[in-house]
Image (cartoon, rainbow, N blue to C red):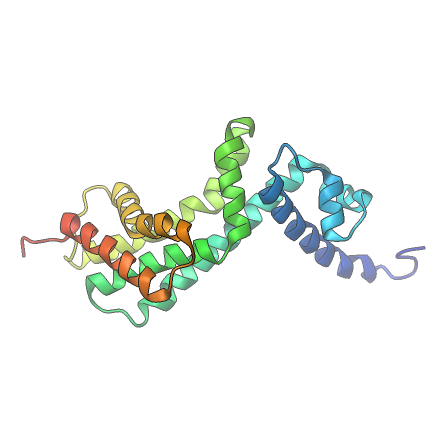
Length: 215
């Protein structure tokens, strides 16, 4: 009988099965949407039985909540890491903001399964509980925006930017730094040089409105 006489076995196996189910669910939810996804499809993708899926997560709704929070946290962590890495080689407000802008683009490109979920939420969002959407916002989007706010406030504290409303400035920055890349990438993959050029153009437009010029 499974686990008989070896109480450490299930504990070792459970995290691996949880991770496999979460990975599979992220892919299937993003591909098929929440309403059309079945627990049977997720179980097949994960290589486990439907019974095991229910044993670990209880319901499709609970699994979706876990997947969304885990995925958003992972992406927000990666974004903060990308920013930190980019800033190590940056100097001056433009270079520093380009590093942040490139991180915004990179974290979207590097996690396609997650952003398929985000697109699905845009379509099916009204059908989800407000609490679930709030947890997702806290785990991911608000953390990413908070990191952008923090970097803008650093520049403002150094007298390099003039910012009355940091949250609004972060939204303006995100739109300007990423919009052209989003539009042009629909026509096919962009090179790193093209992305840097587009992000830089957006950063310069942002600086035109927010750079401090009163000395």
